Image 1 (tube, rainbow, N blue to C red):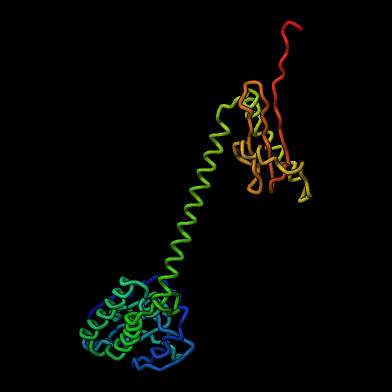
Image 2: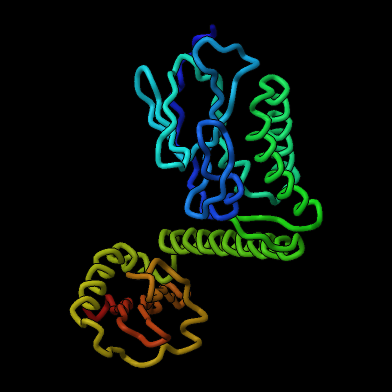
Length: 294
C-alpha cells in the first residue's frame, strides 16, 4: 500500500465569482455532485481506502481542509466533513486558478488547457475519479470555448476581446504619459538644482544663493503662520518670470525663481509665487562708492 503524507499547501486564491461553480459543488464521500449556490470548490483530493489498490482511488471536491495527524478533514459541503487518513491521500489539486482565473492571453489559455490534460491523465491513472475530474474538465473547457469565440475574463468578468484590447491600450498610454511626466519632473528638478548651484552675474546673486536655504526656511515658516489667509504682493511681472530661472520652491504649491540682470553690478531677485502672485521677494544689489570721495 502506498504511504504518503498530505503536504501542507499554501492558502488558495480567493475566488470572487463562486456562483460560476454551482454545478460542481456539494459533494458526498462517494464523489457524487450536487448543486449549491452558497459554496465553491477550491480543490480535488484523490485518495484510496485502506487496503484498496490504485485502481480503486476516488476523488472528491472540497471547499477547504484542515490538516492534522493522522487524518485530515475536508469540507465537501454536505455538513459532515470527509475525514481521510493522510497515508492514503494520493494527490491534491488546486482548482482556483484554473476554474476562475483570468483568461486574457494565449498563455492563460495554454495553462488551463494543460490542466485539462493533467485531469484527463488522472482519469486514465485512476478510472474511478472520472465523475469528478470530468465535471471539472467540462467547466474549464466551457471557459476556453468562450475565449476561443472572442471573449476574455478578468477578475471573474467576461468582456469582448476588442473591449479588453482597448483597456490594455488605454492602460499602456496612461503608463507612458505617467512615465513621461515623471521624466519631465525629474529633469525639471535637476535643472533647478543646476541653476541654484550655477554662477550668476551680478556677483550679488552668488551671495544671495548662499542664503537661499535659510531664506526658504523663513518663507515656509511664514506660509505656515498664515493658515490659508489670502496673502500676496501682487502679480509677478511676466517679463520677470520669463527671464528668471526656476529653483526649488518651499512647497509643491509654489514656484520660486532667481533673476539676475547679467551685469556685474546689477540687481538680483529671488522670488516665490503662488498662482502667479508674489508671496515673497529677496532683492540684492551692489552699492558703488567713489574711492576719491571716501
